[in-house]
Image (cartoon, rainbow, N blue to C red; front, side, top):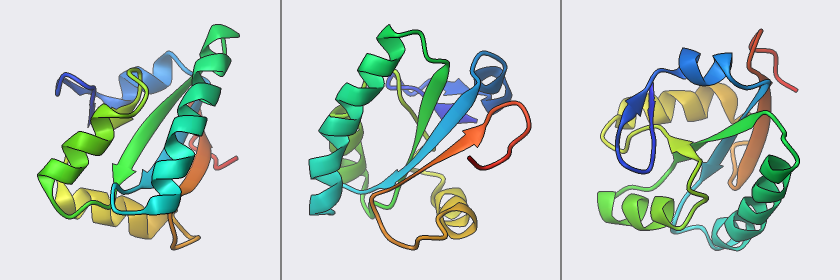
Length: 118
């Protein structure tokens, strides 16, 4: 599951049913390049949405405190989801397994139907 901006938990399988692709966005409030990239990416995502692209973004935070996570997540596009901050072990696990770049910001795309990394 992931959460939306209201904190409501949503099953990942439900998001995958309605979208062709998932973007996994690894980022953190303390990271200056991330804070520079996020607004640009948010605008691009908005443009894609207007064109009918079937895509959702899941934010994986590398923030170390709730206040930073909350402030940064609030600044992101309203349609983006996040792994909840209180699921620290899960956020770390996803980062270790999927962020083979080992730096942020890092954005990857996954085929929502079969899980293949694009």
